[in-house]
Structure formats: C-alpha cells, structure tokens
Length: 132
Image (tube, rainbow, N blue to C red; front, top):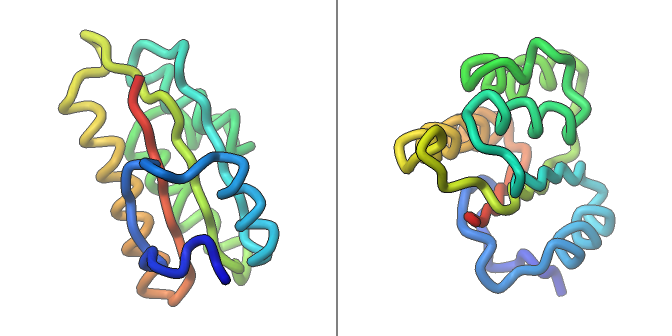
C-alpha cells in the first residue's frame, strides 16, 4: 500500500504526520525524484532560494529569486525530458523579519504553481513543508 494513497498527486501541504525518510523511501519506490531542502539556518528570501537551488542541484541562475525558481521548477525541468514525478520536502522554512509570512506564502505559491504546471502534464508533484 502506498504511503501517499490518500494524498492527491499535485499539492502543497504541511508535512504533518509524514517523516522525511518515509517520503524519500516512497519516492524511490515510486521511481520519482526526491527533492529536499533544509532551510533552518536561512534568514532571507535570497538565502532560502539559494538553499533550495543548491539542494536541488539547480543552476545558480535558478536560485536568484522566486521567479527564477518558478521557471526552473517548471519549464527548465520540463525541457530536460519526460519526468516520472516529484516528492519535494522543504524543511524548517524560516520565520524571520526578512522572511516573513508574506515571503513564506509567496514561496509556497511558487511551488503551488509548479504543482499545477506538472498536474497539467499529468506528472505527480507533491510538496511537503515545515516551518521553524
């Protein structure tokens, strides 16, 4: 039975009861990409984008800002060929003056846009996040 049986194929949600290792194992079992970024020591939008870009092994221009990250998560990856699906974990997103609620929501919107993009292509794109 799939760990994600009751989880829609394209969504962005809090990690809640899931464990990172279980999600990683499930990605391997399903033959999907597992993308993980641990953001605990980041403080600003630029640091968060850079950390995600580094951890996802994106080219440096993809981790400059939210728009560049959105483009990389969608068009750039799609141009690389057929994709099997994605399980993404964004762990301990910061709650700082320079990465406030608005910045966190904007980042999550980037991932929601990516989930919608991949959903249109019938490719699973599940994102799980947690805050500090």
